[in-house]
Amino acid sequence: MTGTALKTTLILLTLSLLTGCKTLNLMQDKKEETLQDRLKAYQSTVRWGYPGQAYNFLRQDIAAKTPVPTNLNNVSVTDYKVIRLPDLVSENQAAQTAVIGFIFDDRQVEKTIQDQQLWEYDPEAETWFRINPIPEFH
Image (tube, rainbow, N blue to C red):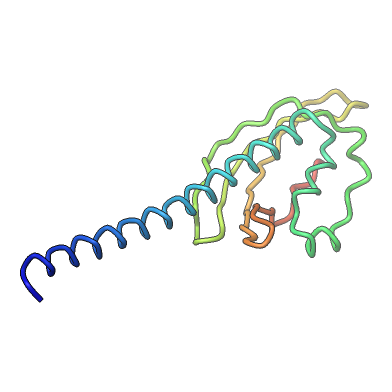
């Protein structure tokens, strides 16, 4: 191989490797963007919706064996504050911690619970599911 052919080959090889790295980064960026979207949807659901809807974010096998508490129709969420931002704990798992303020409608006493969330990415569904129990409002 001549010097020019070798240089051209090396340049093409380098470009193809860089393109491959960029594709991997885009896939990772997409996964992280999906996580952010899922966490925002969870937060909105808990804060502004019916707290029982949070159980829809559980991975299907976990949701199947987790009953929705019956007292949630008496709960009004007053605050949802993320106190530990999402952090990847492995390639397909992330953790986040929030504090949820709430009242029982019949008692009007404000309480808080800490919600330590563990999320797992499902590549088939291309979304994240919660894989640990949702804290009880008590």
